[in-house]
Image (cartoon, rainbow, N blue to C red; front, side):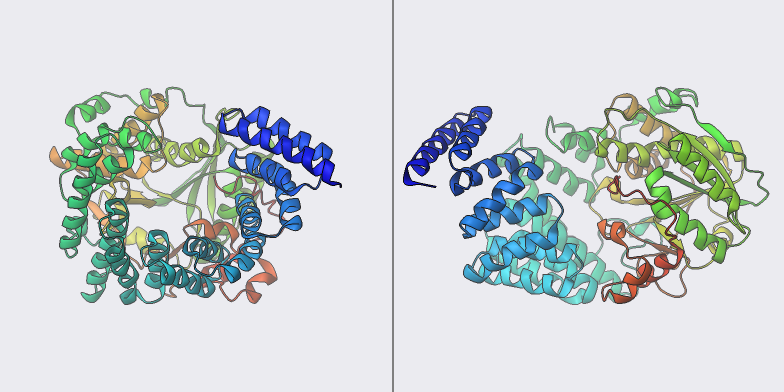
Amino acid sequence: MTAETDFAAEAFVTEGGNALADGRDMDAEASFRAALEVSPHFVPANYQLGMLHLERGRPADGLPHLQRAAKGQPTASTLTSLGNCFEALGNYEQAILCFRPVLEKTPQNSDLWAQYANLKEAIGQKAEATVAYKNALKHNPGNTQAAIKLAWILWREDSASAVQPLQAAIKAVSDDLVERAKLLSVLVLFEEWTARIEQDLPPYHATSLNDLFFHHATDTLKEFATTASTLTQQNQTDSWTLMTEGLALFASGAPDKAQAKFTEIADGAFKPMAQSIRFDTLFFDKLETMTDEDLLLDLPVVETIKTGIFSNTDVLYMSCNSSYFDMFAKPLLRSLADRGPGTEVHIHLMDSPQDHTEEAHNFCSDLNNVRTALSVERPDFSNASLVSKRAYYHAIRFIRYYHHFKHYQRSLWLMDVDGLFNKSPDTFFSGSQKADICMRARPGRLEPWNQFNACLVGSRPTSHATKYLHRIAAYIAHFYQESQLPWGIDQLAMYATFLDLQRRDTAPKLGFLNETILDYEYRDDSVLWCSSGIGKLSSPSGKSVDQDPNATAYDRVFSQYVSHDDGLDRSEKSV
């Protein structure tokens, strides 16, 4: 490398920078590549080309260039960018290694401390994440992301201390209403749940409909609503502010006003969900006219693989895609065979190729102590994104559940497959005989799609339950046929449908599943251990669980039910 080649390379980099400024990405890339042809290790050219790839969503292409830039000039800028690239690729450990020397040289960088902490939390190092979040807040008490993330960690370890970073951050952000609203939206949850704990009430499980929404954190809810309203007045077209005020109105007991606010959201990421939130009578009048055949419009045919000859009063219903079947349903079914022998289960596979379906059939046939039925559908996902696949799996399962419920004419329990049985399901079978519908309801939640939980839903063969399930299926089918199926629409449909039937005095009688039935803390006396969040996708198995200080009781039991010949396919682990 000579001064002459560096000069020529720098000219190309300058030319590329000008092209970027004009929005000519292809020309910029050509210029950066021309610079590297002249001087392959020229740091500015590698850095600019690497950043161009990273910012355009091509981190794998950008990685080698950012590595050369960081090796040639290990500055805060090059190391941070390389760390961002590793993070985009899901290599959190390498990202942490990049950020660490930058933080040593610039310890006042609050945003980087928060990013570093988030990565530490993602790999299960909660103690180090806590320290890093506190460092972020030390240098910027108004760092909203750090305050919220720290509060969630503290809540799980010492709930009484969770509100402190949020309250401090609210004082620090002062007149920044956007950040204030974000902080208040979390503070109101913790205050409500803390009050319930102080009254010996479960924080996450409602015991009646009266437990929904906010009965203790009313002052904070009012402050949140006022802040959201002021934001909307300042910017009447911003999607985030409209969504925020809509949630505040809904949580304050004004669903119709909330729907009107949601309807104003014309674009952006919030639009699909916002446009799907319907509480108006005319909409449900339309759903009432939909026949069972109408619900199946544009859906693939369901094929029966293994017929279930069931005799029990209660039957479990599991629906998932092929990778979730291998990853979670198999361990769940093994735990059921141990804890609930004699249980009957219908398994509905979505997007299961023929060879996988055959393997699943063999697995079910060989399963001891559990009687199974198996069905499959194969939607055309040739051009579908992972997000749309996830939404399909979670939403369309309700339509399939409704039709199988009518077919079996017995109590049918829809359940997520990412859990484990710690005790026999007979506990909740026998304890819910007087209700039409059984589910978990959530106290202290802002969103319409978080009031009722679809983790476990039991339905008795009554007219009220049948009508309720039909309306949920029709709600989902309507938006599916409109090519609008946002994540969470299943739980939204559950709540909105109940609200409409309640107004008409035809709502089903609800039974509420408590923390002994659905347990996220893995107690010895509970029935179903539930897993949630992205951590479930990296649940340890085999010998590694014994060496992992962060392993939970769920992880340890899960590892016992995972077989190394299950053919786990984690290529769609986010689905």
